[in-house]
Image 1: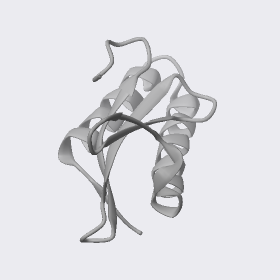
Image 2: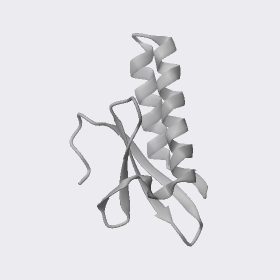
Image 3: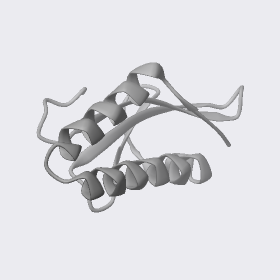
Image 4: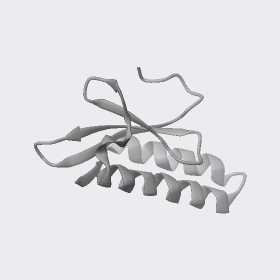
Length: 93
């Protein structure tokens, strides 16, 4: 499937990396890479996440306390990343 990332999700990804970069620049790059790898994983396996609302799925990023919220658009054959959030934040359920 194709991968589409919303502006909101891109912004969240940069905010996460920026926050971590203040303390450890190398870790920030690794976190950003891990989240992007998870995006690609969802494009390859769109049913990997758990359904939390109609048309919204949640995927826990491996080895990180972050959640990816996404939809699967079957008409465009695409996974659409809606947002990325830290697991300690209030959930979007």
